[in-house]
Length: 151
Image (cartoon, rainbow, N blue to C red; front, side, top):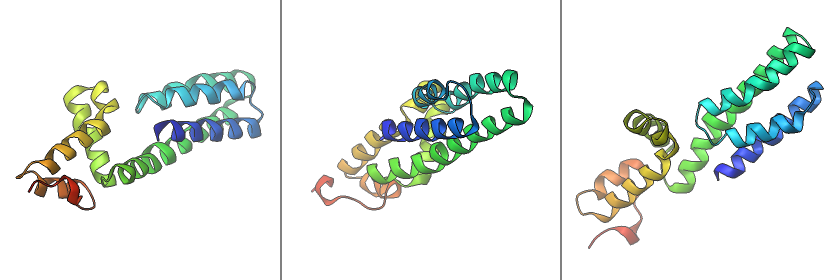
């Protein structure tokens, strides 16, 4: 799922940079695709080199446009679409995905942010299979699957 969303990020960045006439648009799109796996800071790192290039060769106005392109793409895909799709696919609400990113990031730092969704999924499955935790697991998702409940 993350690869598909990263691919969409790269394609949209490539199309946007091509429409703006930025040199090496494909290279910057591949960089955006790869760095999309790094939460939060990857978006910033992928935007800086093309912004510097455009600032040097085209001017400040175009640099601001490139920055706005990266900002909009990463805000829409990374902060709206990704948590919604990941949560829906894993049976967790979008709010749980957001909160898990914050909590695991606070507990384990950048590694916790990378592993937040898998760790929360493991916790949800563990709660669904225990007798007392099944009620808590309901809060993490849309409902409780009957096959995992004890008894």
